[in-house]
Image 1 (cartoon, helix red, strand yellow):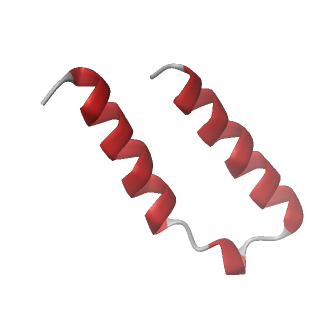
Image 2 (cartoon, rainbow, N blue to C red):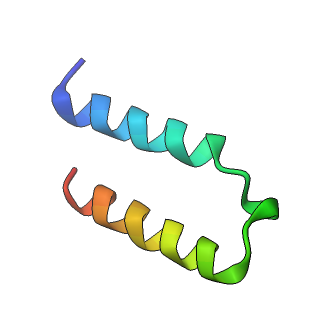
Length: 42
């Protein structure tokens, strides 16, 4: 497995573990921002 694949798998796992229904709108926007930053580094 390549480093890129590992990073993608970790990001996918993090997304799948998120409980978005329990987040308020600001928490959801912050989470989305952090995920976007992580995705940009892949």
